[in-house]
Length: 306
Image (cartoon, rainbow, N blue to C red):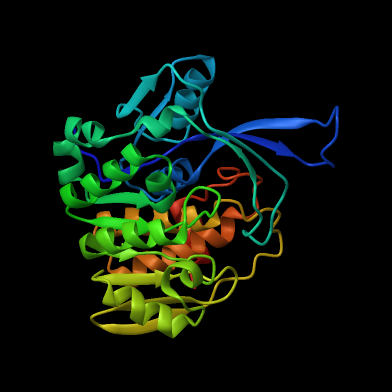
């Protein structure tokens, strides 16, 4: 099997509430999570994409796999596990900083471990890019080991630190980042969400310098609707984020950026072109509700790229 991009992580059940949280409130069922959002964006950007995860051996797990397939993602690396799927509840969020309500302790995806990486080692090693996340590493001790094993096995790693204080401590997230960074073709931290707890700075230039010093070959720093900073051996550049007047929900925009950028790197685009397309895709994604509410096509992302 030839896969351009492998995304490793958790797919979550998404419950969206448009009204005030109260007895009788109407919820919309969907599926999201940083891994699914990134994988969907990667597939839409033209890459043959698979998600490596575990989902429940139940009707919800069946629905997740149907949604994965609908999004153009290869489900063949998904393991079924007799556990509940992780879930979260959200309202519309234009800032991307809201703390959502999660139920994920002991989830199916938390059982990810090194054996999953070993089982698919040839695919992981041959992929044009492997997308890893700090969220995945924080799911459990075994999931952290799976992330580290994948980083060692992959030829091209794209790592989004995605720090979540409800899942892990800054100290542990820093330790994972330090181990993964030397294997990375690209780090995609957010500023200040990731940069302050993990790199001790909210200054874009300092984030680029510090992240590169960890050993990554390149860094792309997102800052919400502010500029995206990019640095590698060739130098530094900043790109503006296009204003989207139709924005309704920023959930998953950073994941769309990471997934799109990883896809284009895997397909041979230069770093700066891949980042530009990632910015275009992320800026368009905010017109949909939930993490995969709107995944733009490659043509749309090209048209929106700065």
